[in-house]
Amino acid sequence: MLSTVNNSAMQKVIGVWVISLTGILVLAAYFNVFEAPRNVLESITAIHWVALSAILYFSLPRGMWSICFIFMTVLGVFHVGLVFASALNGITDKDTLYQISRWYYSVETDNAIHIVNLAMIGFALGAICFSKEPSASIEGPRENSAYQKRLFHIGGLSLALFVGLFFLLTIITGALNSYGAYLEVMSHSPLYSLIFSYLYFFIGISLVLLCVVYRPGYGYWYFALFAVWALVAFKVGLRGEVMFPSAVAACMLGRKGAPIKSSLLLIGVIGFLVLTGIVKNARVSGDYSGDLSVNPLNAVAEMGSSLRAVQETVTWRKHENFDLLLGGSYWAPFERQFALFIPQLERVDVQEDGRLLNIVVQNKAGPIGFSAIAEAYINFGEKGVILLFFGLAALMAKLDSSTSNIRNNLYIGVGLLPMFVTVRNSFIHVPVQIVLGMLISTFIMYIAFKKDKTTRMSPEWVN
Image 1 (cartoon, rainbow, N blue to C red):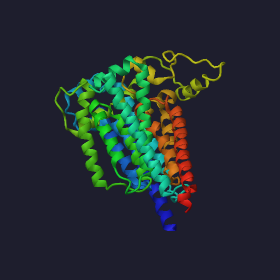
Image 2 (spheres, helix red, strand yellow; image 1 turned 90 degrees about the vertical axis):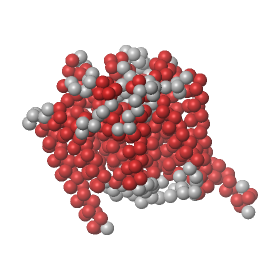
Image 3 (tube, rainbow, N blue to C red; image 1 turned 60 degrees about the horizontal axis):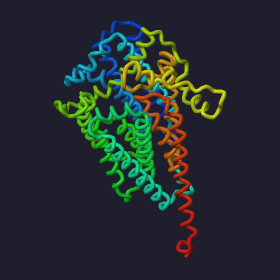
Image 4 (cartoon, one colour; image 1 turned 90 degrees about the horizontal axis):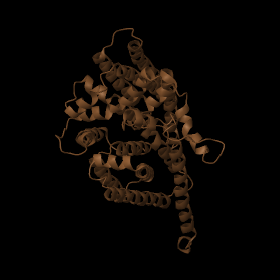
């Protein structure tokens, strides 16, 4: 026991030491201690991301299946992917090169890359400092095989329901034809946009429930259904809508032990990147009429374009005198909900509320999504980015070490769903979706428990 504690402490010390070394290099470039032209900055950032990911992989108790590592991976892909691919001269897709030429080579993007590096330093330090061995798994008093299997089928049937609604609505509206058609439907009908956003949320909750309660022998039909939906959604061009619930599902499976071997995961990731590169064509041109690219680095670069949201916020501050919100965008969703019930609170029109960053970026730059890093920066500046991501990592490290049982895992999973979505979206929907997810999870567990209790009291059970 003492040896385990000593090893854990040593891993933390080594982890903090390596993070500090890479951090010194990044901060030296940030403060112009040495000249870092774009090619040097790209190389430093790529090495920085790989080094921090390796430290988390080897230092965190759950390794690559920890919540912190998976979130860091997703965060890096969407913010460093473009920088990484560019550093390797691996971008061969003409459409991607044309799209990024309008913003990527600006001075503001240099600033944005520095800010992303600061976020990764803060997150890695928080993850290492607050990580500890997971608490022993404890099966709750309700957790028998019948209760667990009932939850599994509830999750599967709800997944079938929401996937069915997705196909019904996309066929009726024509959104299934192409990504261009999907965007047109979303832009012309705010109601459809809201409905689809919650369909993805409920599909995510259903998948989380399946992963939390799955046991060998339950079958794979429900997972196959999700895979079919994911392939169709990917073909349309919906990328994050598939990736984020899948990442959270991996977190939930990881809490029960490594679900697959690292070699198989690597093969799956490469296949996923190739598929993403093909899907990229639909996202850029609206259909699959152009040349299809199977270069994985093109996919990494296209996903990494969330860096633009950070670049946009830098531009707002430098050239548009956009004042720091000082937490305004984090408070806005609470205030707007309170205003529904408190007459004295004014509920500002969404187009006029400058704290709703999903609306602000849409009006200023178009449908480019947003970013958790950009939101932290436009609220609190560079220091706030480090502190907020340090705190976020501390929270996720706490979740990583918490007791693994059905109730805890389900609550953690539905709470993580909207948090992962903020990697490339704004914070505005997070509080409502966390509360809604908790309520739905509680209701589902209550229904399954009541049914289990009724079954136990039946004459057949007693006899």
